[in-house]
Length: 221
Ligand code: C5P
Image (tube, rainbow, N blue to C red):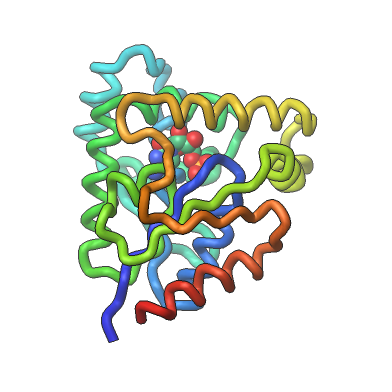
């Protein structure tokens, strides 16, 4: 049978990456976490002391950098100029700034191009904000995954509470702010593609969400 591409978009903390990874495993497809790519660039810039205001400089550096994705057992590693950025990309510092870098045109065009290349041979599950609308508008399956902001903050809190000093209230605030920036940006903002299936996971656990998506995919393959 033919392989398909699966696009999973939605706001921060909806569980996209956990679910997308498991969907890919079920289908024996490749999982691509596009958020990790934006985060890796963000961490690189923060470390180099280049602020997101310096659009032209960011642009220039991003066009010249090598970006590689290494699929590892449970996480996907993102290498920039051969160096693994992954250990740093989930921090609150990166989460707090990534939307400022991800709205820069040169960042988006470079990453979108890489993402399209990865999906050329199909058999890819890709998650992000603009996959169904911009990166892979021809994806056979498009899912828009959401959950209430309270539920999303709670999920993030459970993930982060052991490594970061943060309150649930702070996370709720941060997540809502990031959604506003991602929805409000000029280039490929976060929104549901017209042909995307809406999946509200507020009252679903991970396996239920995975099952819903996989069974939808099975109608194509
Ligand atoms: O999915 P994750 O929360 O890791 O994404 C981090 C950030 O990267 C998002 O808040 C958004 O600003 C940016 N992003 C994007 N387009 C994508 C994936 C992520 O702009 N396709």
